[in-house]
Image 1 (spheres, one colour):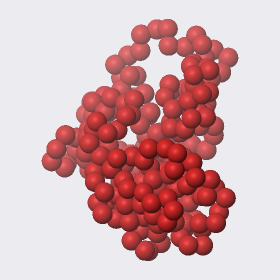
Image 2: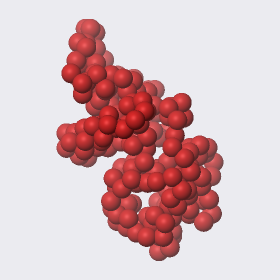
Image 3: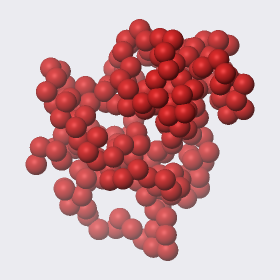
Image 4: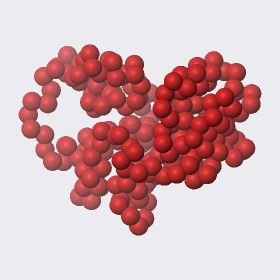
Length: 206
């Protein structure tokens, strides 16, 4: 599965969930809660196979975090070899990706934008520039928007918008200083994801 560069709204309609986790996409989904295309409203009338259900769940989660199949499967296999509940460990590994943490802190409005900010060197981790979106953030790591990037229109708008929202409970944010800390691993109940990770475990265990 290559990197998707098309409309996130259409992809969200196809998967039936808000992949961007933005109010704009949610409003569009509420207005058109069916797949895109000429026959979108007629899809899904038949009973999907067990394989199809599990494949769709895997696709939804991979697309939510913007990952390709190889990278996604490698991360799942790592989670499967770590003590604990595989599904929860897997979601925690996904949440620790730098691009995702940048999104959770509100520096970026979407994960796609967060990946771009990281790649362009706008984000520092513990004072050092990190330009790898898949970099794994550790508990206690401090993320900062680079000094020269704080005047960017997008980042300023994102920080102002974030002041009106509730930040994820596993990160701490100081929007005035463009700084945030990854304070703990999220528990499964913290993650309001419309995903059944057990289907993904079953998909990769087949």
